[in-house]
Image (cartoon, rainbow, N blue to C red; front, side, top):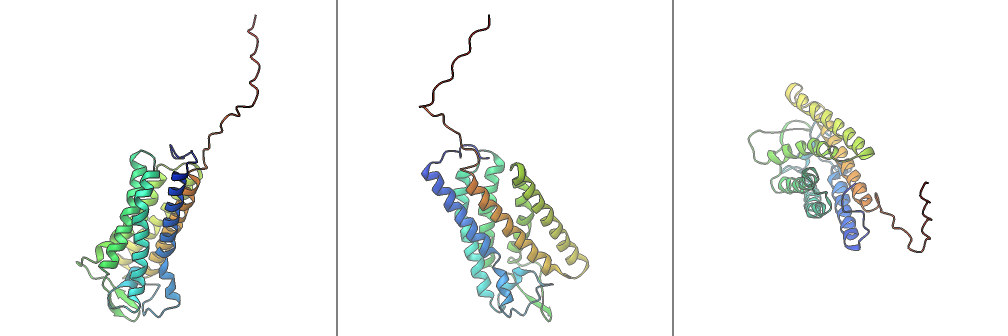
Length: 236
């Protein structure tokens, strides 16, 4: 899998476990919008994207901004450790940079929450030209770019899994574009929520991959006590 990671060295093993733990925390908290089931957010989950839940002035907006802070901090903290574990090529290092960058986007979204302009009951519109909209756009782009980058260098079943996740994310992104352009955001909330859940699933796949790094290709050392095989006689 990853070059230089087949030795069971305690320091590297500790880095793997710490990295996996940070990614796991980030993946779970990243899907924190699911608590809207128990809260009266006054927004429609079918038509309003989950980023609007943390909008300034929205009910429980502070709760959802805390989720962004926790998940973002976990990803930012995991970035340098992933860089240490990543193979020495551009795509591996780009993966670590994407994780760090996504954490920074979530932190920026918490610091600059998006705006919510109520058009009708439970419907929240996105105004244009506001700085707070940039983290929302960047987060949506990251959902598509990250599995694409990873699928270019993972192998075997890992590659197949990330390609499937990329196909799903691209389809959801395409629907979001069409929904906002032609259908006034109809069912954009469901598509965006599915995007977040698929992104969390992708991060959990990454957790599994990080934990498997040290066991995927263990080199079996020869037993020094074993008897050497007898040399074959030279022909003729």
